[in-house]
Length: 468
Image (cartoon, rainbow, N blue to C red; front, side, top):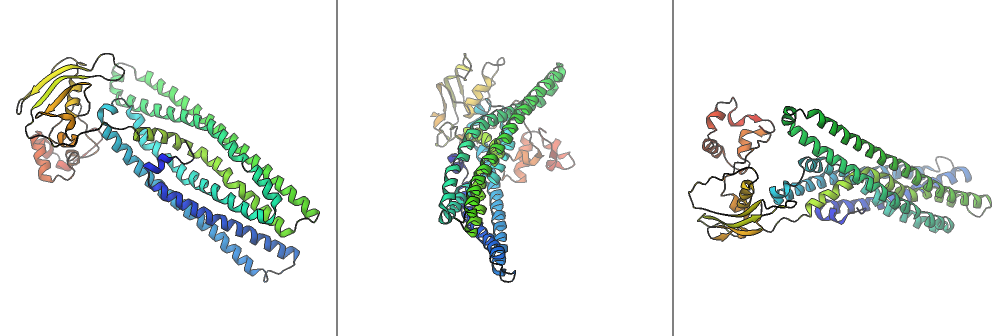
């Protein structure tokens, strides 16, 4: 993934404002760094070389205190902007992810692992915190501060500026090489976490069945193996992070030492004045620090970058194009030689099915498991598109109709109804959140559940746990 992925700018608009704020605050911070170096040099030269008293140095002392407060304020504003942008981006990405998964429909969802998607929508998106709170602000400083500092140094001492120009690019070069290794490790770590989440959720969901067949302990061993793999992958990633941080610190330290040695030699031989030497010595580490910190913060953000790749893979999966026409008044349903094939299966899930259902007619679909009953219903609901044949409603091709309007005319009771955590009324209102209490009561009566619900102490306001 690139330092700033263009897809992040496209899918999360809050990123753009945040980057503008980071660059602006970074520029202000760079100017304050330069001002601080000049004031410290002026105080040292004035106090030790010129013999000025504290009273005579009062103005630069007050200015130095103001600059220190200014740097603290810039750091606070940067952190505040980072956390607000992170919250906005996470909310926007999570909403887009759920919306796209919903639009892709059950046919796509059936090919995904529920636990992996849950981990992606929760832990995966939350992992972007470090990317916004640490990595991007530091990246903004790494772009602005070295350029501003180098521009100031070159006006004072071109020799030191030349040394910095030669050694500074070595840090990004090492960062790129280390980043390649780190990203592959983090991708592996995220895949293991996703696998662990999916497997654990599947085991919990199927625990009663596993217990009946005496396979619960075997699954516990499987989870222990995956957890151990994840632990080892995490430790390998941390090992690279620590070693790379050491390498970057060593390179930056040697570069600053090289600048310091040349300044010291020229000060001894009288080729450089004390004020210039101090300004360059104070500014030299500031030129390397932001770039060095980018390398350190990259490791903190790497998990979020790995998760972002999977998030974008979902967001960039295009749903099937759907029609926009109104549903006809006559709901005569016709299926003509409908065939559906699923990827990875040699035989069609539904083979040349033909069916006609007249308005008001009751039809029962019967047959052994796997014959295609659920697939046929998914085709009628518009969740699966036939590879061959045609579905017509009132003489119109189903593919031409607006799917939301078509589904609003259908009542659907799945094989395994799912009740969400919330009140009974909230579960009844899922399809129509704006439905009034009278509509909820009418729906409960139609479902034959009103007497049972009314007998509960809180009636339809009774709180339910997950899955009822």
